[in-house]
Amino acid sequence: MAAYIVLGNFTEQGIHTFKDTTKRAEAVKAAAKKHGVTMTGIHWTIGRHDLVATFDAPNDETMTAVCLTIGAAGNVRTETMRAFSSTEMAEIIAKVK
Figure 1 (cartoon, helix red, strand yellow):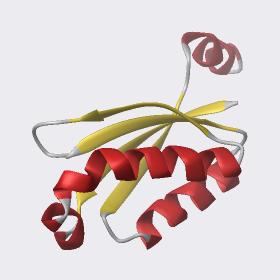
Figure 2: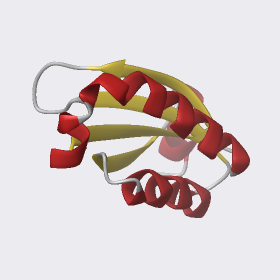
Figure 3: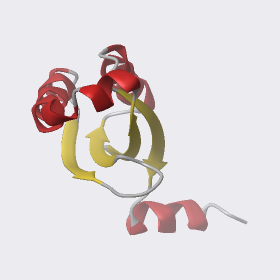
Figure 4: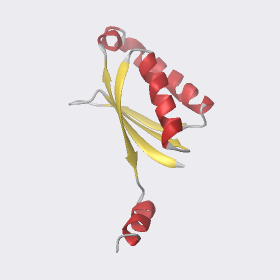
């Protein structure tokens, strides 16, 4: 499974209904699971982004489908980054000649 970090910012709709954000997080977790994706964590943050979530997904395409599902609800805009573990990074470095 590949790891992904998702940065989220509330939309106007999302900030107006911020009291439901933890319930929405549970709904995202359930929706992700239907795609074979695991939400491994979520944190609400202070600063440039309103939340940071982590996921494990089988591939980029599946994670993209999850992010489109999240975005379609209209409460958050996301920015997704593929994350590499230490082991994965060592394998990547070994390929550099």
